[in-house]
Length: 295
Ligand code: NAP
Image 1 (tube, rainbow, N blue to C red):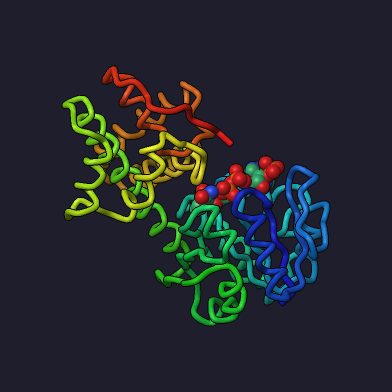
Image 2 (cartoon, rainbow, N blue to C red):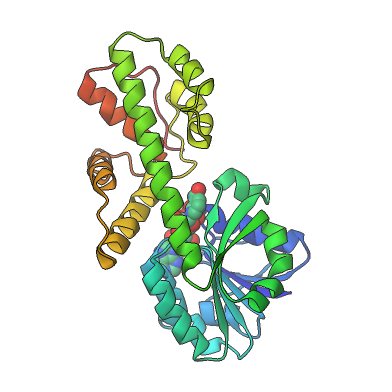
């Protein structure tokens, strides 16, 4: 298919490369020049990338970035043709997604929200899971592109429901990890060996995908970013905004947000979100085992 891919960050670069590898005709664009994908045409504006493309796929930082790429100067909107499909794999606001979709549909194109789960490793190996909101026929048409970048798509319903589900999932990840980090901090302070504590977690019902994934990094105090703290913090703000919009109270998340705020102030934004452990250890007077890196 003829695809434009907009945003060549940690995720987008690998996703676009996998589209090229699968034989699609890809044009790429990135806000900051200098990024390229071998085998893809390089565009100088989002509009140039989007012109005469069947599909325009985005993976940029946040809601403001998507708005800029779509509707800013030289944005996608000016080049959109009737019948094209805009797909957003960024994690952004569900309510803004509905507004963006309405503007895109006014041009005779369709809009699909398809945020992803899986970190940079899954993006590189084409093993992402897409959480998809959009109409059935449009999502069907995207099948070969999803297959090139991911291992599974989960259909959540109409436009916006993919983003809503993604926020729900990340809310759980943030809280589960914080529970793990607090338990490790308390038990370390009580004199329990950390490796034994992880062995206990691994063998009981408290085990989860989050603890499985994070335990080896935490044991090494390795906070090299797989999912940077700044992006999880952005997602926590999206969750709290959505909660406010819909009059939902999230007291646990509000407290965790304060920890992310302090972690950001203390310079951990570009480390993995697992680095919130460092603050808990500091407050508990526990000495860190190893030096951390930001890659
Ligand atoms: P990233 O490495 O920080 O890349 C962000 C990309 O967005 C860059 O290409 C950046 O361009 C672009 N961008 C930022 N602001 C922009 C603007 N105003 N206009 C145009 N482009 C703009 O982020 P990432 O890790 O690839 O994540 C991308 C999205 O996927 C985020 O929404 C994130 O929450 C989500 N996600 C990430 C992961 C993960 O593990 N990393 C996992 C699941 C979902 P420049 O190069 O010019 O800065």
